[in-house]
Amino acid sequence: MIDERAALIAERTAFHEMLTDLADDDWDAASLCEGWRVRDVAAHAHLGATMTIPAALIGLARARGGFDRFMNAQVRVEGSKPISEILGIWSEVARSSKVPPILKRVAQAIDVFVHHHDIALPLDRSVPLDPARLRWMADGLVGTGKPIGGAARVDGLRLIATDIDWHYGTGPEVAGPAAAIILGGCGRRALDDELSGDGVAQLRQRG
Image (cartoon, rainbow, N blue to C red; front, side):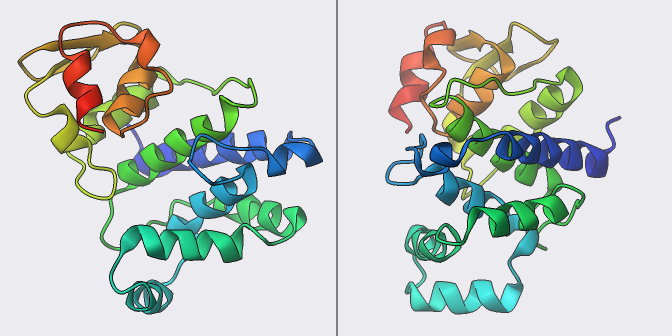
């Protein structure tokens, strides 16, 4: 059985190592998150470890309960900080397994993993893939509610990873590398060309 604390730290460490290798120009490049620069994604991705409950409640109230409005407002503030400050925050987060009280560690690992791709893919960089962590995140994906929403997206589908020993569910088939399945289950389309099966179209339709 995987050590969830160590697994989350490993995902955060991989993300931090990627950030430390970016050129200055990379930080203002577009990410796969619509309207967000690389620096915005980097600033957003540490909030699971750094945001306090009072700050979250105040932010949600100001956003009139809209989670997306709240996140966009936070990103405008956090993403505008100097690169050195964002990296300084990540140097601490990379050693932490802290998560918000209402979320599981696997959900936070999935969030970091997906945002790692949001930055790495448009910059033509690779993302480290550990089989044990992929299996853990794939198992976690199928039970995630909002904001990840994996459970609803993969409901009624048969998921089959082709690079690790993992499968889930019954119904129309979606087969491909575990990373592509995880991203697809999180609503990301960047690796859809690596997926096959008669369930792929249905997965895409679910956003």
